[in-house]
Length: 415
Image (cartoon, rainbow, N blue to C red; front, side, top):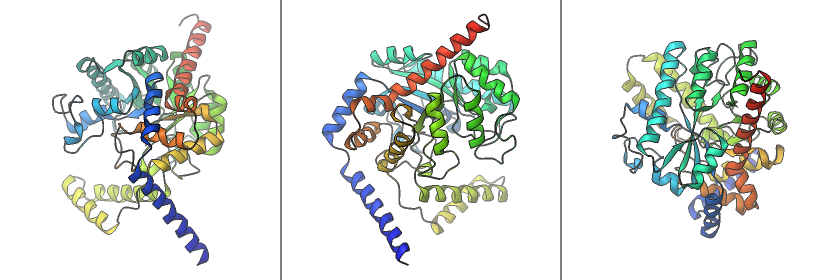
Protein backbone atom coordinates (compact mmCIF):
# COMPACT_ATOMS: atom_id res chain seq x y z
CA UNK A 1 0.00 0.00 0.00
CA UNK A 2 2.86 2.38 0.81
CA UNK A 3 4.37 1.90 -2.67
CA UNK A 4 0.98 2.44 -4.27
CA UNK A 5 0.42 5.69 -2.36
CA UNK A 6 3.90 6.97 -3.22
CA UNK A 7 3.37 6.18 -6.90
CA UNK A 8 -0.03 7.90 -6.79
CA UNK A 9 1.55 10.91 -5.14
CA UNK A 10 4.19 11.17 -7.84
CA UNK A 11 1.52 10.81 -10.53
CA UNK A 12 -0.62 13.56 -9.00
CA UNK A 13 2.39 15.83 -8.46
CA UNK A 14 3.44 15.42 -12.09
CA UNK A 15 -0.04 16.25 -13.32
CA UNK A 16 -0.27 19.28 -11.02
CA UNK A 17 3.09 20.48 -12.33
CA UNK A 18 1.96 19.98 -15.91
CA UNK A 19 -1.32 21.76 -15.27
CA UNK A 20 0.44 24.72 -13.68
CA UNK A 21 2.80 24.97 -16.65
CA UNK A 22 -0.13 24.84 -19.03
CA UNK A 23 -2.11 27.50 -17.13
CA UNK A 24 0.73 29.94 -16.53
CA UNK A 25 2.33 29.46 -19.93
CA UNK A 26 5.93 30.18 -20.81
CA UNK A 27 7.69 33.39 -19.86
CA UNK A 28 6.92 36.08 -22.47
CA UNK A 29 10.51 37.32 -22.57
CA UNK A 30 11.80 33.80 -23.25
CA UNK A 31 9.24 33.29 -26.00
CA UNK A 32 10.44 36.56 -27.56
CA UNK A 33 14.02 35.24 -27.48
CA UNK A 34 12.88 32.01 -29.16
CA UNK A 35 11.07 33.89 -31.92
CA UNK A 36 14.20 35.94 -32.59
CA UNK A 37 16.21 32.71 -32.83
CA UNK A 38 13.69 31.28 -35.30
CA UNK A 39 14.01 34.35 -37.51
CA UNK A 40 17.75 33.67 -37.67
CA UNK A 41 17.59 29.89 -38.06
CA UNK A 42 14.69 27.83 -39.47
CA UNK A 43 12.28 25.75 -37.45
CA UNK A 44 11.63 22.59 -39.48
CA UNK A 45 8.82 20.22 -38.51
CA UNK A 46 9.11 16.62 -39.69
CA UNK A 47 5.46 15.70 -40.19
CA UNK A 48 2.16 17.48 -40.83
CA UNK A 49 -0.85 15.73 -42.40
CA UNK A 50 -2.60 18.73 -44.00
CA UNK A 51 -2.58 17.08 -47.48
CA UNK A 52 -4.57 14.16 -46.12
CA UNK A 53 -7.20 16.55 -44.73
CA UNK A 54 -8.14 17.57 -48.26
CA UNK A 55 -8.68 13.95 -49.29
CA UNK A 56 -10.32 12.90 -46.03
CA UNK A 57 -12.77 15.80 -46.14
CA UNK A 58 -13.24 15.57 -49.93
CA UNK A 59 -12.52 19.28 -49.79
CA UNK A 60 -11.32 21.88 -52.28
CA UNK A 61 -8.92 24.71 -51.52
CA UNK A 62 -11.95 26.98 -51.27
CA UNK A 63 -13.45 24.74 -48.57
CA UNK A 64 -10.18 24.29 -46.68
CA UNK A 65 -8.46 27.62 -47.19
CA UNK A 66 -5.15 27.81 -45.35
CA UNK A 67 -5.20 31.60 -45.74
CA UNK A 68 -8.20 31.69 -43.38
CA UNK A 69 -8.73 30.54 -39.79
CA UNK A 70 -9.10 26.77 -40.11
CA UNK A 71 -10.08 26.43 -36.44
CA UNK A 72 -13.57 27.50 -37.58
CA UNK A 73 -13.94 24.45 -39.81
CA UNK A 74 -16.03 21.51 -38.64
CA UNK A 75 -14.20 19.50 -37.55
CA UNK A 76 -11.59 22.16 -36.83
CA UNK A 77 -8.02 22.04 -38.04
CA UNK A 78 -4.94 23.24 -36.17
CA UNK A 79 -2.89 24.37 -39.18
CA UNK A 80 -3.20 27.51 -41.28
CA UNK A 81 -0.79 30.10 -42.61
CA UNK A 82 -1.35 32.64 -39.84
CA UNK A 83 -0.71 30.10 -37.11
CA UNK A 84 2.30 28.64 -38.94
CA UNK A 85 3.80 32.13 -39.06
CA UNK A 86 2.97 32.72 -35.40
CA UNK A 87 4.75 29.44 -34.62
CA UNK A 88 7.91 30.62 -36.39
CA UNK A 89 7.72 27.86 -38.99
CA UNK A 90 10.64 27.97 -41.42
CA UNK A 91 10.31 24.57 -43.07
CA UNK A 92 7.59 21.93 -43.10
CA UNK A 93 7.68 18.34 -44.30
CA UNK A 94 4.14 17.83 -45.62
CA UNK A 95 3.15 14.18 -45.31
CA UNK A 96 1.64 12.65 -48.45
CA UNK A 97 0.09 9.84 -46.43
CA UNK A 98 -2.17 7.21 -47.99
CA UNK A 99 -3.85 4.33 -46.10
CA UNK A 100 -2.14 0.94 -46.14
CA UNK A 101 -5.22 -0.51 -47.85
CA UNK A 102 -4.03 1.32 -50.98
CA UNK A 103 -1.45 -0.91 -52.63
CA UNK A 104 0.24 -1.44 -55.99
CA UNK A 105 -1.25 0.67 -58.81
CA UNK A 106 -3.96 2.10 -56.56
CA UNK A 107 -1.37 3.17 -54.01
CA UNK A 108 0.90 4.76 -56.60
CA UNK A 109 -2.06 6.70 -58.03
CA UNK A 110 -3.12 7.86 -54.56
CA UNK A 111 0.33 9.06 -53.53
CA UNK A 112 0.73 10.93 -56.81
CA UNK A 113 -2.58 12.66 -56.09
CA UNK A 114 -1.33 13.58 -52.61
CA UNK A 115 1.95 14.93 -54.00
CA UNK A 116 -0.16 16.95 -56.40
CA UNK A 117 -1.98 18.50 -53.43
CA UNK A 118 1.34 19.82 -52.09
CA UNK A 119 2.29 21.26 -55.48
CA UNK A 120 -1.12 22.91 -55.70
CA UNK A 121 -0.63 24.38 -52.22
CA UNK A 122 2.58 25.96 -53.48
CA UNK A 123 0.73 27.46 -56.45
CA UNK A 124 -2.24 28.69 -54.42
CA UNK A 125 -0.22 30.32 -51.62
CA UNK A 126 2.99 31.55 -53.32
CA UNK A 127 3.54 34.32 -50.77
CA UNK A 128 3.58 31.78 -47.93
CA UNK A 129 5.01 28.52 -49.33
CA UNK A 130 7.76 27.49 -51.70
CA UNK A 131 8.80 23.94 -52.60
CA UNK A 132 12.22 22.98 -51.22
CA UNK A 133 14.26 20.15 -52.72
CA UNK A 134 17.59 20.64 -50.90
CA UNK A 135 18.91 21.87 -47.58
CA UNK A 136 20.18 25.00 -49.34
CA UNK A 137 16.65 25.58 -50.65
CA UNK A 138 15.28 25.49 -47.11
CA UNK A 139 17.70 28.15 -45.91
CA UNK A 140 17.18 30.31 -49.01
CA UNK A 141 13.39 30.19 -48.73
CA UNK A 142 13.53 30.89 -45.00
CA UNK A 143 15.62 34.00 -45.63
CA UNK A 144 12.88 35.20 -48.01
CA UNK A 145 10.36 34.99 -45.18
CA UNK A 146 8.48 32.04 -46.67
CA UNK A 147 7.86 28.53 -45.35
CA UNK A 148 10.08 26.03 -47.14
CA UNK A 149 7.87 23.09 -48.05
CA UNK A 150 9.28 19.58 -48.34
CA UNK A 151 7.44 16.37 -49.14
CA UNK A 152 7.55 13.20 -47.04
CA UNK A 153 5.95 9.89 -48.08
CA UNK A 154 4.48 8.03 -45.12
CA UNK A 155 4.81 4.34 -45.88
CA UNK A 156 6.67 2.17 -48.35
CA UNK A 157 3.36 0.81 -49.67
CA UNK A 158 3.21 4.09 -51.61
CA UNK A 159 5.66 2.81 -54.23
CA UNK A 160 3.97 -0.52 -54.99
CA UNK A 161 7.23 -2.53 -54.77
CA UNK A 162 8.64 -0.55 -57.69
CA UNK A 163 12.04 1.13 -57.58
CA UNK A 164 10.85 3.09 -60.62
CA UNK A 165 8.03 4.58 -58.53
CA UNK A 166 10.54 5.48 -55.80
CA UNK A 167 12.69 7.27 -58.36
CA UNK A 168 9.75 9.14 -59.88
CA UNK A 169 8.35 10.31 -56.54
CA UNK A 170 11.83 11.63 -55.73
CA UNK A 171 11.76 13.59 -59.00
CA UNK A 172 8.39 15.02 -57.96
CA UNK A 173 9.88 16.29 -54.70
CA UNK A 174 9.64 13.51 -52.10
CA UNK A 175 12.62 13.89 -49.77
CA UNK A 176 11.87 11.17 -47.24
CA UNK A 177 9.98 7.91 -47.22
CA UNK A 178 8.84 6.17 -44.06
CA UNK A 179 9.68 2.54 -44.77
CA UNK A 180 6.32 1.33 -43.44
CA UNK A 181 3.14 2.73 -41.98
CA UNK A 182 1.05 0.56 -39.64
CA UNK A 183 1.14 -2.60 -41.78
CA UNK A 184 4.07 -4.65 -43.07
CA UNK A 185 5.13 -4.17 -46.65
CA UNK A 186 6.44 -7.07 -48.71
CA UNK A 187 9.96 -6.03 -47.70
CA UNK A 188 9.85 -4.45 -44.21
CA UNK A 189 8.10 -4.98 -40.87
CA UNK A 190 5.85 -2.32 -39.32
CA UNK A 191 5.56 -1.62 -35.60
CA UNK A 192 1.76 -1.96 -35.82
CA UNK A 193 1.79 -5.44 -37.36
CA UNK A 194 2.93 -9.01 -36.60
CA UNK A 195 6.61 -9.38 -37.62
CA UNK A 196 6.95 -11.22 -40.91
CA UNK A 197 10.45 -10.48 -42.19
CA UNK A 198 12.24 -9.69 -38.91
CA UNK A 199 13.68 -6.52 -40.36
CA UNK A 200 14.34 -5.85 -44.03
CA UNK A 201 14.27 -8.40 -46.83
CA UNK A 202 17.03 -8.25 -49.48
CA UNK A 203 14.69 -6.13 -51.61
CA UNK A 204 14.12 -3.87 -48.60
CA UNK A 205 17.87 -3.40 -48.36
CA UNK A 206 17.91 -2.50 -52.06
CA UNK A 207 15.25 0.13 -51.43
CA UNK A 208 17.35 1.70 -48.67
CA UNK A 209 20.40 1.72 -50.97
CA UNK A 210 18.38 3.31 -53.77
CA UNK A 211 17.08 5.97 -51.38
CA UNK A 212 20.70 6.66 -50.46
CA UNK A 213 21.64 6.92 -54.14
CA UNK A 214 18.80 9.34 -54.81
CA UNK A 215 19.37 11.50 -51.73
CA UNK A 216 16.01 10.60 -50.15
CA UNK A 217 16.06 10.40 -46.35
CA UNK A 218 15.25 6.98 -44.87
CA UNK A 219 12.52 7.55 -42.27
CA UNK A 220 12.25 4.91 -39.52
CA UNK A 221 9.11 6.09 -37.73
CA UNK A 222 6.47 3.31 -37.70
CA UNK A 223 8.90 0.40 -38.25
CA UNK A 224 9.79 -2.40 -35.83
CA UNK A 225 12.98 -2.34 -33.77
CA UNK A 226 14.43 -5.06 -36.03
CA UNK A 227 13.70 -2.95 -39.10
CA UNK A 228 15.29 0.09 -37.45
CA UNK A 229 18.47 -1.87 -36.77
CA UNK A 230 18.50 -3.48 -40.23
CA UNK A 231 18.16 -0.12 -41.97
CA UNK A 232 20.86 1.44 -39.81
CA UNK A 233 23.24 -1.37 -40.84
CA UNK A 234 22.53 -0.90 -44.55
CA UNK A 235 22.28 2.86 -44.96
CA UNK A 236 25.28 4.99 -45.91
CA UNK A 237 23.38 8.22 -45.20
CA UNK A 238 21.86 9.66 -42.02
CA UNK A 239 18.35 8.46 -41.20
CA UNK A 240 15.50 10.30 -39.56
CA UNK A 241 12.57 9.39 -37.37
CA UNK A 242 10.13 12.01 -38.69
CA UNK A 243 7.65 11.72 -35.80
CA UNK A 244 8.78 9.43 -32.96
CA UNK A 245 9.70 9.86 -29.32
CA UNK A 246 11.61 8.00 -26.59
CA UNK A 247 10.57 4.43 -25.73
CA UNK A 248 12.02 4.75 -22.22
CA UNK A 249 9.38 7.36 -21.34
CA UNK A 250 6.42 5.90 -23.23
CA UNK A 251 6.42 2.23 -24.18
CA UNK A 252 4.85 2.53 -27.61
CA UNK A 253 6.35 0.40 -30.37
CA UNK A 254 6.67 3.45 -32.63
CA UNK A 255 8.98 5.16 -30.14
CA UNK A 256 12.75 4.68 -30.26
CA UNK A 257 14.52 2.41 -27.72
CA UNK A 258 17.73 3.64 -26.13
CA UNK A 259 20.04 1.32 -28.06
CA UNK A 260 18.62 2.62 -31.35
CA UNK A 261 18.98 6.20 -30.09
CA UNK A 262 22.70 5.49 -29.69
CA UNK A 263 22.90 3.85 -33.12
CA UNK A 264 21.14 6.85 -34.64
CA UNK A 265 23.71 9.17 -33.10
CA UNK A 266 26.53 7.07 -34.59
CA UNK A 267 24.75 7.25 -37.95
CA UNK A 268 24.38 11.05 -37.72
CA UNK A 269 20.60 10.78 -37.89
CA UNK A 270 17.83 12.70 -36.12
CA UNK A 271 14.89 11.67 -33.93
CA UNK A 272 12.11 14.25 -34.45
CA UNK A 273 10.00 14.22 -31.29
CA UNK A 274 6.26 13.67 -31.80
CA UNK A 275 3.50 15.56 -29.94
CA UNK A 276 0.91 12.77 -30.09
CA UNK A 277 -0.25 12.16 -26.48
CA UNK A 278 -0.37 8.38 -27.00
CA UNK A 279 3.36 8.44 -27.76
CA UNK A 280 4.21 10.82 -24.92
CA UNK A 281 2.91 9.36 -21.64
CA UNK A 282 1.95 5.84 -20.62
CA UNK A 283 -1.61 6.63 -19.45
CA UNK A 284 -2.40 8.20 -22.84
CA UNK A 285 -0.79 5.26 -24.66
CA UNK A 286 -2.93 2.75 -22.78
CA UNK A 287 -6.07 4.76 -23.50
CA UNK A 288 -5.23 5.14 -27.19
CA UNK A 289 -4.58 1.40 -27.56
CA UNK A 290 -7.85 0.50 -25.81
CA UNK A 291 -9.76 3.01 -27.97
CA UNK A 292 -8.23 1.58 -31.15
CA UNK A 293 -9.05 -2.01 -30.14
CA UNK A 294 -12.68 -1.05 -29.51
CA UNK A 295 -12.90 0.89 -32.77
CA UNK A 296 -11.61 -2.10 -34.76
CA UNK A 297 -14.08 -4.39 -32.95
CA UNK A 298 -16.98 -2.12 -33.82
CA UNK A 299 -15.88 -1.80 -37.44
CA UNK A 300 -15.99 -5.59 -37.77
CA UNK A 301 -19.35 -5.72 -35.98
CA UNK A 302 -20.90 -2.97 -38.13
CA UNK A 303 -18.89 -3.07 -41.39
CA UNK A 304 -21.44 -1.05 -43.41
CA UNK A 305 -22.64 1.39 -40.76
CA UNK A 306 -20.10 4.10 -39.89
CA UNK A 307 -22.71 6.05 -37.92
CA UNK A 308 -23.35 3.03 -35.69
CA UNK A 309 -19.59 2.68 -35.15
CA UNK A 310 -19.35 6.34 -34.15
CA UNK A 311 -22.30 6.26 -31.73
CA UNK A 312 -21.14 2.99 -30.17
CA UNK A 313 -17.64 4.36 -29.77
CA UNK A 314 -19.07 7.44 -28.07
CA UNK A 315 -20.93 5.18 -25.64
CA UNK A 316 -17.71 3.27 -24.97
CA UNK A 317 -15.93 6.55 -24.23
CA UNK A 318 -18.57 7.49 -21.63
CA UNK A 319 -17.79 4.26 -19.81
CA UNK A 320 -14.02 4.75 -20.23
CA UNK A 321 -13.20 8.39 -19.37
CA UNK A 322 -10.09 9.88 -20.89
CA UNK A 323 -7.02 10.01 -18.61
CA UNK A 324 -5.45 13.19 -17.31
CA UNK A 325 -3.97 14.96 -20.34
CA UNK A 326 -0.28 15.33 -20.99
CA UNK A 327 1.34 18.68 -21.71
CA UNK A 328 4.27 20.27 -23.48
CA UNK A 329 6.26 19.58 -20.30
CA UNK A 330 5.98 15.86 -21.06
CA UNK A 331 7.10 16.44 -24.66
CA UNK A 332 10.10 18.41 -23.36
CA UNK A 333 10.94 15.42 -21.13
CA UNK A 334 11.36 13.30 -24.27
CA UNK A 335 13.78 15.86 -25.69
CA UNK A 336 15.70 15.78 -22.40
CA UNK A 337 15.92 11.99 -22.55
CA UNK A 338 17.14 11.86 -26.15
CA UNK A 339 19.72 14.52 -25.33
CA UNK A 340 20.97 12.43 -22.40
CA UNK A 341 21.18 9.18 -24.40
CA UNK A 342 22.09 10.33 -27.94
CA UNK A 343 23.18 13.95 -27.64
CA UNK A 344 22.00 17.42 -28.61
CA UNK A 345 22.95 16.97 -32.28
CA UNK A 346 20.44 14.20 -32.92
CA UNK A 347 17.11 15.76 -31.86
CA UNK A 348 14.42 17.40 -34.00
CA UNK A 349 10.70 18.15 -33.92
CA UNK A 350 7.97 16.19 -35.71
CA UNK A 351 4.64 17.38 -34.35
CA UNK A 352 2.33 15.07 -36.39
CA UNK A 353 -0.31 17.82 -36.45
CA UNK A 354 -3.54 17.08 -38.34
CA UNK A 355 -2.84 13.40 -37.82
CA UNK A 356 -3.90 12.72 -34.22
CA UNK A 357 -6.73 12.99 -31.73
CA UNK A 358 -6.23 15.78 -29.21
CA UNK A 359 -2.92 17.57 -28.70
CA UNK A 360 -1.03 18.01 -25.42
CA UNK A 361 -1.93 20.99 -23.25
CA UNK A 362 0.22 23.90 -24.38
CA UNK A 363 0.75 22.50 -27.90
CA UNK A 364 -2.77 22.93 -29.16
CA UNK A 365 -1.85 24.05 -32.67
CA UNK A 366 1.06 25.00 -34.94
CA UNK A 367 1.46 28.41 -33.31
CA UNK A 368 2.80 26.78 -30.13
CA UNK A 369 6.30 25.65 -31.17
CA UNK A 370 7.95 28.68 -29.50
CA UNK A 371 6.30 27.72 -26.19
CA UNK A 372 7.95 24.29 -26.28
CA UNK A 373 11.33 25.79 -27.15
CA UNK A 374 10.90 28.36 -24.37
CA UNK A 375 10.38 25.48 -21.93
CA UNK A 376 13.67 24.02 -23.11
CA UNK A 377 15.40 27.37 -22.54
CA UNK A 378 13.90 27.43 -19.04
CA UNK A 379 15.62 24.08 -18.50
CA UNK A 380 18.98 25.53 -19.50
CA UNK A 381 19.18 24.87 -23.25
CA UNK A 382 21.27 27.51 -25.02
CA UNK A 383 20.35 29.48 -28.13
CA UNK A 384 22.69 27.20 -30.10
CA UNK A 385 20.91 24.13 -28.68
CA UNK A 386 17.54 25.58 -29.71
CA UNK A 387 18.75 26.20 -33.27
CA UNK A 388 19.97 22.61 -33.54
CA UNK A 389 16.74 21.07 -32.26
CA UNK A 390 14.54 23.46 -34.26
CA UNK A 391 16.10 22.71 -37.61
CA UNK A 392 19.88 22.66 -37.96
CA UNK A 393 20.12 18.99 -37.01
CA UNK A 394 17.70 17.85 -39.71
CA UNK A 395 19.37 20.16 -42.23
CA UNK A 396 22.67 18.47 -41.39
CA UNK A 397 21.07 15.06 -41.97
CA UNK A 398 19.58 16.19 -45.28
CA UNK A 399 22.94 17.54 -46.41
CA UNK A 400 24.50 14.24 -45.40
CA UNK A 401 22.00 12.40 -47.60
CA UNK A 402 22.81 14.78 -50.46
CA UNK A 403 26.55 14.16 -50.07
CA UNK A 404 26.12 10.38 -50.01
CA UNK A 405 23.91 10.56 -53.11
CA UNK A 406 26.50 12.59 -55.00
CA UNK A 407 29.24 10.12 -54.00
CA UNK A 408 27.19 7.04 -54.95
CA UNK A 409 26.26 8.57 -58.30
CA UNK A 410 29.93 9.32 -58.99
CA UNK A 411 30.82 5.74 -58.11
CA UNK A 412 28.19 4.50 -60.56
CA UNK A 413 29.37 6.81 -63.30
CA UNK A 414 26.48 9.24 -62.85
CA UNK A 415 23.77 6.59 -63.24
